[in-house]
Length: 116
Image 1 (spheres, rainbow, N blue to C red):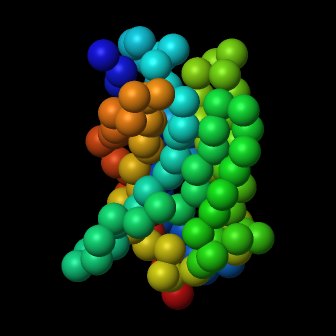
Image 2 (spheres, rainbow, N blue to C red):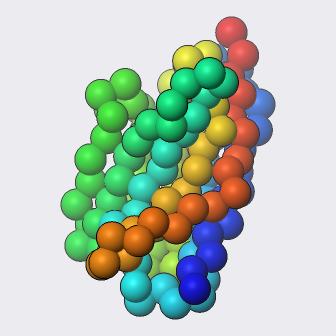
């Protein structure tokens, strides 16, 4: 099994920064692609950013230039640096890990609230 635990959410004013972390444990060799998703109240869960085991990244248009995804395979940890935060970034942020077979693993989520 694979376990993912997020940390780093919180309350920040618009224009501020937050950094999220996701620690992966368990059968981690199964994990290929990792990503951050978010879900705001009344909205569907959406992809924020993703990174492959080789380091290739992709971002949602809404966060390009403001957010940076990275991973440290030695520490089994993925990060999301969020700068220039906007109120519309407010959501529960989820860590996702996808195995080479396409199985998805999810963290419990961490709340990010951006005040105007």
